[in-house]
Image (cartoon, rainbow, N blue to C red; front, side):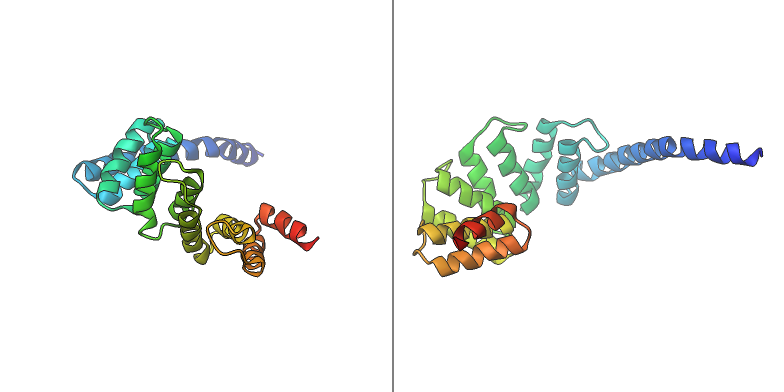
Length: 197
């Protein structure tokens, strides 16, 4: 009889204890990362930027995230380059600056970072921070589509369907839209239904 209430009590306390242990572990891990980042370790700089961006082990702080992303990006870390581009695009921790967003996306895109390739295409098609160019947009979407990025496959398919930045080819358009739909992209599935009528 006495044993059952103790088990129930220990189970009810356990999640709280686990959460406290996780928070302590996160704080200790971030402290260790800070030491390595301050010593110039580019991976530690990148991870510390992520920690500040998402409030892991430290309070969420976009300005500190950008500070550490910048250090890692300057050392060629493609994820930090992408995150820095994203910060400039959306004004997180810095002011909105489309030219700087394009600059950092391009750095990451040149290292085959798929989301940067896709976003660079969006900036070209909108003329944000770069001269408007459907051809350049299609070029970058092609790179991301070739690596299996569904949103890029859909946009490339649309470009082929409309002949924007590429020679119009509805067969190629259908191929790319189908690729995106096969990955579960809802907009691609809708586009296929429209193409079927």
